[in-house]
Length: 234
Ligand SMILES: C[S@@+](CC[C@H](N)C(=O)[O-])C[C@H]1O[C@@H](n2cnc3c(N)ncnc32)[C@H](O)[C@@H]1O
Image (tube, rainbow, N blue to C red; front, side, top):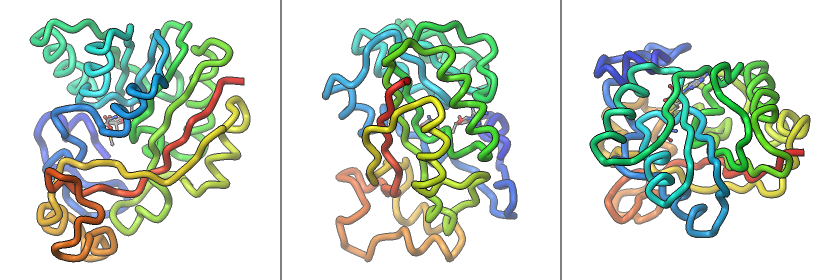
């Protein structure tokens, strides 16, 4: 998917499908609730690196909590917008354009990493390169927090890699010790009706029954199943 075009406000298609997307489903204008929960539970130690930071709201939230944060994304438009947002809010985050598979331009020394819905954008081979590069920029014992869509999400949109539990554990296990892996909810910025209008009929499996509170937060935003993984740098 052409993420940069999406951040420029253009309509894009998913690779491997003719499905059009003209809104950013992960725009919350605030941090992802699971990220707030992690911060509340003391799961971050600075300096923190955020991978695939997109609209920058998680990174800005962590900076607001007092962490030293570096956040990167491959989409230059997103990083430009994030820098403007940080300046507007008087927050300091080092927003960098970088590719996850090499991390060129990212200095080392991180004690925590956040990956909120980036890793599933990679093929299996790219994921191995990413996890190796991440290992190289982190201190021993660093914590890696990942939110990654599982294979079953493919009813909604195609994923380039395999994100079943065994594949993820296999690739992480090369450099990271997985000490928690559970299914949680990723909050999207769209309501059930907006998803139904934007997605193919197969997406119906993710739409909760009418009037059911399941899978919808208290603001009416649809939540999707996501792997929450906690891993420690070996
Ligand atoms: C689904 S969005 C999630 C954005 C944000 N982390 C969130 O949860 O709101 C995935 C992000 O990963 C970025 N991305 C995808 N592939 C990447 C790569 N190889 N290197 C760096 N960023 C990448 C995209 O540009 C996009 O901003």
